[in-house]
Every structure is written in C-alpha cells, then in structure tokens.
Image 1 (tube, protein in one colour):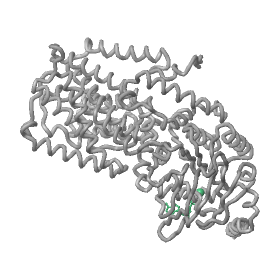
Image 2 (cartoon, chains in turn yellow, brown; image 1 turned 90 degrees about the vertical axis):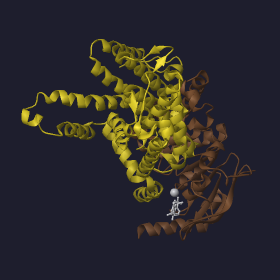
Image 3 (tube, each protein chain N blue to C red; image 1 turned 180 degrees about the vertical axis):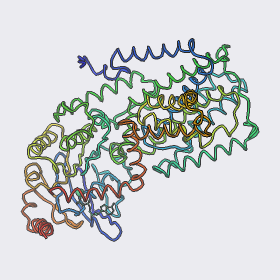
Image 4 (tube, helix red, strand yellow; image 1 turned 90 degrees about the horizontal axis):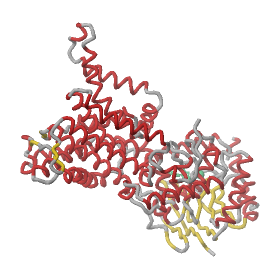
Length: 357
Length: 258
Ligand SMILES: Nc1ncnc2c1ncn2[C@@H]1O[C@H](COP(=O)(O)OP(=O)(O)O)[C@@H](O)[C@H]1O
Ligand SMILES: [Mg+2]
C-alpha cells in the first residue's frame, strides 16, 4: 500500500504521479537507447517499424480507443503523410519542417473528410472512412505530376542540420524520439478537457452533449489529431522504406492499424505500443519457432499466416479484462448505436415496470 | 419573477401527441416539480428543453431568451444542467473525472494549448479539481472519489450524476425522477441537499418526481400533466389535493392492479 500526502492538487496533474513511475519509463527509454548495441541490423529495423506503427497506433487510438469512432481508412492518412514528406524533401524542404507538415496535411484532409461523415456511427462510419480512403488512393494514382502515379517515387534520406539519418541505428533513434514526443503530446491531450471530452463522447453521446460538449466539433478534432499523428508516422514510414507507391497503402494496412489498437487494448496509449510490438514481432517469432517444429508441419504452406491469425483470435478470446472487455464495448457501439435513442427508451419502459413509481 | 417559461409547447411522435399546448412558469430560486402518471410526457419536456427533440409549436424562455435556436450543447452553455431518468454517466471513468467533466463549459483552453500542457492549462486543471472537490464535500462522495462509476451502487451513481450537473454551475437544474431507486435515507439526504442548493447556491430546480411525500417536502410549486395536457399548475398543496390530479393517479393505480 502506498500513501500519498497530498500537499496540493498539482501533484495529481503531473505526468507521472509517482517518482518511481518516472524512473521506470526512464529505464525503458535507456534500454531502448542501448538496445541497438546488442541486436543485429535486421532486428533493429523491425524495432524501427514498431516505433512507426506505434505512432500511427497512437493516432488511431485517440480516435477509436478514446473517442469511440472507428476508422477503416487510416492507411490513407499514412499515405498523405508519406507523400507530403517525400515530395517536400525532394523539393529541398528540410526534413525538420517536412515531418510536421506531413502531420498537418493529413490533419487538414482529416477535417475535410471527417466533418461531413462524423455524424455517422459504428459500421456506417467504418464504411464511410473506407470509401474516403479509396478516393485518396485514387487521387494519389492519378495526380501523376506530383506523385508519379503508380510508378511510385524514391524518398530521400532525412537529414537534420546536415546530420543524415542514413544508418539503421540513426533512423531507429529518430523514430524512437518521434514516438516519445507523440506519446507525450497525446498524453497531454488526454489529461486535459479535450481528452476528457473525447472519452465522454465514447461513453455517452447524450450526456456529453448535455454537458455542453459540441459533438461535431470534438469528433472533428479527434479525427484531425488522429490524422495528424498518423501523417507523422507516414512521413517516417516513407523515409524508412525509401520507395513509395499508392499500392503501399491499402485497405489491408488500414485493417492492420485497427487490429493493432484493438489487440493492444482500446482506450490506452500503452495499447498502441503493445499492439505494434505484437504485430511486428509475432510473425518473426513464428518464423523462428518454425525451425523447432516437426518437418511435416514446417513444410505446410501458409503456416505462418495461419498461426498469426490463430494467435490474434486467441488474444481476443482470452485476454481477460482489458482487451476483451473493451472489445465488448466497441461491439456494443456497433450493435446499438444507430438505434441508440430508440432503444434507450425501450430500457426506460422496462425499468419503469420493474421499479416502483 | 418568471425565470423559466414554457409557452404553449407541443410535440407529437407519429400520431401520438406527447405534449399538447403545455405552459408553465418557474420563478427564480424556487423548486418546481412536474408530476403525472407514466407516459404523461414529463421526460419529453426535459428532452425538448435540452433540444434533443424539436418542439412542433411553442417556445421555452430562459430569462426571457428563447431556447429555440440553440443547439443541445449550447443549452449547457446557457446554464441549464440536467440528470437523466436512467442515469447517463461516463461509466468507465472515475467519480472525480465525471465531476471534472462537468467543468467542460468553463474551459478556456484548446487542443493546441493542451497538447503542450501550458501553465494556463495546468491552472485550469487545478481549478476544476478544486471545484470537483467542493462538490465531493457537499455530496459526501469522498469514499468514492477514485472509483469507477460502473462499480458503484445505484444510489451513489444518482448522487454522482447530480454532482456532475452541479459542477456545471448551472442556474437552472433539471432533475428527472431524482428519488427513483433511492432508499428512504438517500431520499432524505437528497431533500437536504436540494434545500442547500436552493438556499446557498441559489439554483433554480425543475424536477420530475413520482414520490409525493418528497414533492410535498421539497417543492414550492407543481405542474400536473396527463396525456401531454396540463391538469393544473399551482402551489404544491393545492395541486396535490386537486381532484383531477388524484383521479389521474388513481386511474393509474387501477391499471397497475388490473
Ligand atoms: N422518441 C420518442 N419516440 C416515440 N415516442 C416517444 C418518444 N419519446 C417519448 N415518446 C412517447 O411520449 C410519451 C411520453 O413519454 P415520456 O415523456 O417519457 O413520459 P414520462 O412522463 O413517463 O416521462 C410516451 O407515450 C412515450 O412513449
Ligand atoms: Mg420519464
């Protein structure tokens, strides 16, 4: 048991409530900084992808995990971030500007798309965001003068003040720093009125509105900030893989991002990181462990995706509270939200029958 | 002095006329109750004030200002807070966070300043926290401060919902069946708090209530409705003893027994 002598409420709004929490995070960061010394280049590259996916995951987590709005089109924001950064740096704009510009462009597109469709809920919203992503993908294909269409384009090595991120290890550090910054910004939003408004919208739109929360405005803000972070991730992604074309950003990737936040645990920033680790490392683990299986199993085609799928199912089934509980909640939104008002009245009648009046 | 007024309000759902030219006047600083059998249209009045529904006809006036052109979230900004018949709390948040959410309409920050958690944002957070603590004190919620709402007993949830409404610092508070599901002791507490809210905080209260004893104990004036129509509006005793009111409730009793 830990007792806290509260001197004032300032203690409660600090980023880390306990000093020990801070030191644990510090140890974690130090661990990440030292890690490259002991692992090979390939693993390091995978770690970089974890950071990049986690940044995008934080973006989607704010929208889906905290605001309760589902998006099946987030690969489009990743694409916008990638292309913005690729085009800008190719034109000689410093990476230090191109990176935030990727986020801002994605956020602006997010507002344009989000505003008209955000009154939709559940599956309807999912389909609408998917449709928007198709449109964006098509634009990237057709806008050849800028994007080079299906031919794709090469992406420069990012440099900051002449320092080139041209090695695995340097790029990993870059991604790690961006991830930490993004986590801090997201955490700040969540411990402020806007973040609480997001969660309020997720838990009860009716009550949120009655408290003075402007649903349209806050859903749009959630969409924008979500797109912003995903756009930032897109920039890193482009510079990591050197070559981008519209086919790199498919519906499959949107679904993967969604899977990352759901598996990681909706409604937690940690979840975005856990989900990314799960998604990047698990296939590796399967490949490695394959060597230890009997040869007739080893030779089975499609073993790796099947095992991966199976593990996803198992996590969804057996993760006791966190993930499973929240999953139920999202399902509840799917099932009830379009009919919410109507059914809340059904509930009222039942309740009146059961109680005295 | 007329503080809040409903003038000839009507609304229909399909063929059903849920409210039919209902009018009433709530004076500044009083506790006003709406009574009537189930399905009379009481909650519908609240939902119309809140602008969840659009009135077919008529108008609500707060301090002489029409609510007709306001959106739901703007109603809160005008100082009208409410609770719900079936409790609409943010169930996966703590009691404290629910109360702090009540402070939303007072916020001066925006997502950009919050992202960096600048000093003014910090001060605002501390200020919200202090207000929330005042309410925790007022409603005796210390024991539940950091608990998730979903884990609390029904009566405490109702208190938290009242607290969240109070955190908005409303001038007009709408309570939909505040005693339903409460035991005797909890109802007594509520009557006590209502009195304090009226005397010390100067809040005007408009409530829907079924418990006649409670109405008698707390309320200044009453509106009785049935089938969406006014039976009578007046002083509490006058209304409760009115033959048509008694008949409306008696009628319901018969239906229940049948
Ligand atoms: N959204 C709605 N759609 C259809 N009918 C409704 C709706 N809201 C209320 N009603 C009907 O209006 C009448 C009054 O309901 P309500 O105001 O909830 O009654 P109460 O006085 O018990 O609070 C009831 O017959 C109810 O079924
Ligand atoms: Mg009702």
